[in-house]
Amino acid sequence: MSGPPETPVDGRQSEAALAICRGVRRLLRARGFATVTELALTSGRRADVVGVNGDGALLIVEVKSSVTDFRADHKWRDYFAHCDRLYFAVDAEMPLDIMPEEAGLIVADSYGGEILRESPAHAIPPAARRAVLLRFALAAADRLHRLADPGAAPET
Image (cartoon, rainbow, N blue to C red; front, side, top):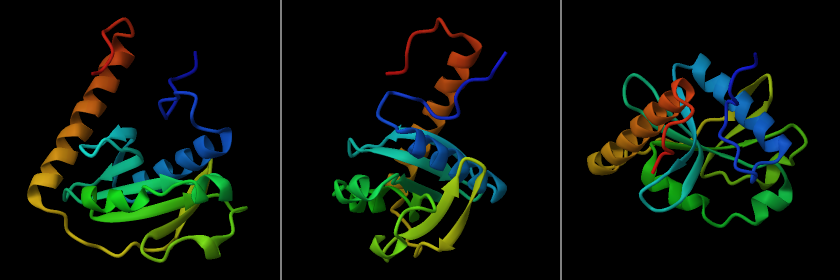
């Protein structure tokens, strides 16, 4: 019996994006972060990967699977209000020189990833941190519940 997918799949993610996401999650786990994917934020945006560590540090990783995907995204700066560090994650085929310097940079595949450039750190306000942590906890708990009880009502 195979396990559940690591990333909630809603049909929007390409195979390349799912592979990058898996590698990012493996990298972050090795660095002490718990992660959830496709997390709805208070702004209405949906973050690809959100990580939190034991100190409460929050990071968001925006996965970009192609140049077209990157160029079509004009919302990534909105994520700064919801995390202490923001990263882009791409595969080895992506031209790295187009990635913004304001964010960190991760190169990943389905087996793992490497941080090529650290994200500049900036502390978010306590109320924003609380809101993201609460959404993170509720999403993680709901997803665990659905694994144990697949017939349960969907998350709201």
